Image (tube, rainbow, N blue to C red; front, side, top):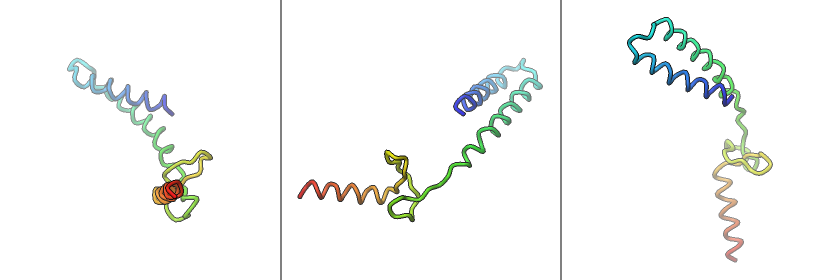
Length: 91
């Protein structure tokens, strides 16, 4: 996936250079634009296939923070856990 995104960025930069160069053939520009569109189609589904998981503690909010075992917790539960940890060490 990283290579596809890098290729897309490189083509977009090349396209901008080609557009600034008045001697560039319009068919060449069109081909690069088509290649960029194909790469965008390759990267878009992966972004939409991300599974949204709920917090393992409250089971209501969307988990945003990853724990060591790849489980997710929400920021609210993380803050509560942090506050409890701090209060236990202060006593």
